Image (tube, rainbow, N blue to C red):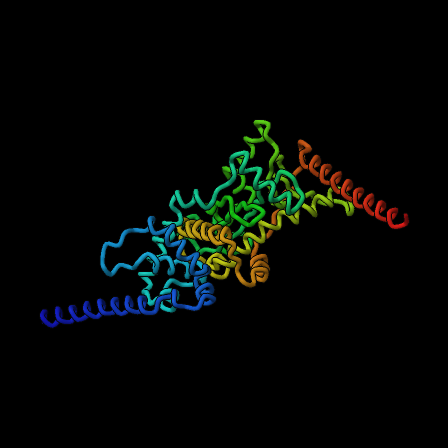
Length: 379
């Protein structure tokens, strides 16, 4: 009886090893890199050259191959990219794309996510400007594009759905009645993400997350030292501060306040577009996908997607139908909790005055030029 049992066990083990060999042959013979370029981009969200660059960046941070049949780094990275880009279940990603078991997909996703969360990678790809030169460079981008001086970023919060956590469930149940983490993002005018914090539950309001943000403390310190040339832009969920400019509530039509609000909304819209590009490319972050992980693991996946977003964005890679993706994401955005905050020190009103004066000077110059052209025509 025991002999038959051991024979059956040996046969089962042989079959498992053969399955692994078959899958390895499938992966090697049917390489994803042989796919047409557009199909590769659709499945893995990066071009082939960018994927190869990413492999060179991440391979040193992946665990070494201890066995001859271990999954190679490029397949690990492709597996993670497919999951981040498609969302859904690990089993579906492994079976449909790469011939991997759910367990193998889990291991690939863990290794690549950890690699993308290594401190060296995070510091390289997600970096808020700190030096005068860096601050000035970001500020120049906003001024050239939107006409507001001194802006070094736009701050916003965005919810990423997760399964119901085992511990402290109430901290993750948001106002739209699903469990999430409230991700704080700061971006520049080119949609690069300068800072991300994915550690707070969905029940936390944006203002609470911002209150614990190191960038908030950094900006306060700049102003306390008398270096208050720079500010961030935020929506009405945040309290007005000299280092965080928010809209003027109930601004009168045609007033300087209303003009400021229009410029503010135009510039701050980069945060919406940035979140749209992030979630549109890495669709595991969309509300209907739901990350089926603990809050800590989900937060690490968000960090990983932000690194990949910046990696692709800095290379100039734009996804097709990005504007439609933005609209889809905006529909899923959380309900805004407007904060009634006052411009205590007058910093916002001073900016309103500067923008209004610049507008009037520009209009005067236009009228003057037209007058000169008219006189020249009749002489």
